[in-house]
Amino acid sequence: MENNARVSLMIMYEDETVDVRYSNGAQLQVSPCGCEFMVVKPKDPSGHPLQPIERVRQRTRFTISAYKELMVAVLEFRNKYASRPYLPEELILPEHKKRFCGIDSDVHWPEWSSCEAEPGARGETIIRSEEGRAVLMLSPSGDEFSVEFTCNLSRNKSSQGTQQQQHQPEETFQSTTVVQHHSCAKVDPIWCYPLSLAHHLAAASLSKPEDHRAEGVRNHARKSDVKRSSQLPQALPLKCASPHWHRWKVEDPLVKSDHLDQDLPTELVKVIWCQGVTYRILSGAVAVVEVSPGDGSVMRSNGVLNTYFTLHRPELSGQSISQVREVTYHLNSLPPDVPGQLYSICSVASRASRILTCYNEAKLSLKLPVTPSCLQDEQGRYSSNPAMTEGNLSNPASIEQLVDVESRSDLVAAELEKIRRFNFLLENRCLPGNERRRSEVECTSAEHVTHEPVSENCIAEALQRTSKAIQDIDALISAATLT
Image (cartoon, rainbow, N blue to C red; front, top):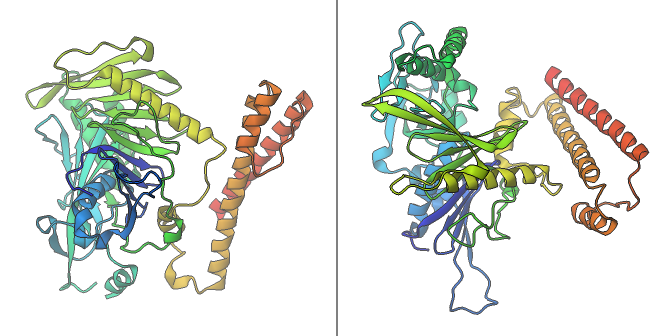
């Protein structure tokens, strides 16, 4: 595959699988852990129609030279939005590597009283850690931020454990700088304190220091003053512990053209990049789509009223922000395109709405797989319970506790599946018989489905079962918390 193939679309799913589409019809996917990838080569137009599509599957760190440049660019996109970066030494450019002693990932941020912000070239508010290993840059709009931090390169688990047991001061390790982009609407706890400082200093520099957000972030930062220390994200190991969980989404082509007007992802997505614009899904009780056009402004859907979008556009005076304008648009009355504008508000908002609609439909779909992600296994099973490490898995009590946690997860997933199916039957009870039966057969092909009309007594009984299922889920979560 040509290295000069133009990227037309990049997607990160919620399980942190990365899917990249190229203008020549090729596709590249990276596993959630980053250690493996698959290339689907474009179909030869002069080849036989029945000729199968050529696929290449390789370990990321051992990629051949034909894909090396592509993988460097894809990993850069992945590490921007992933919870933990994947940093194989073979794909880090020599000029981006640096040596350091020790592997301490703790950083300390300035105190509230002595913190001073550094203005950026485009109106950003910059906060630096005391050691200089981490930098937080708040965007001019105050709705998103990026971080740069020093991170050790990915290593094997065995060698990592040996190094930790030794902490030899004369031993040096290789590191690199990682850049991540985040939304202020959904912040990881490790960035809360420096983000609060940046918000306060940015609000103080505005022409209207009485901005309603200033007092809130000031109080939040004071309360968080005792949490000035945080631990930076660590690189994933070189090898995946669960490669059998890698699922490749290559059955149905995602894009038939350079636009997202026809086919959108049918699975839960986290980030979509298309034509220079980044679309981020903020999951929650009510999903929100956030758009970053690349000029410092941010557009976000308004929660339940998702047909409304609010654009936050900063107005700069030199290197300082004079004010942040907020304009709300409705999908039915978007402004026309103006010659010379950087991007089309109409096309960006329309595409964001379609992405959000597809996300919500996928979230409610009965066909969503419950297969766990290899990254969830790496971060959830061991990080959520520090006691469950390789050192004490030989203890029978520890093994029993681990199996008990996995069984609870399966029970919760099963109960949630029952609730989804009940909601589907309840929403489709008014459909004509043939249409209802066809929908039920499509969504519950693995189970027997009754075709009798749904009565009020059946609905009441199903509601009672749903309530009981929710109570069981709460009890399981409470038991897991106490354990």
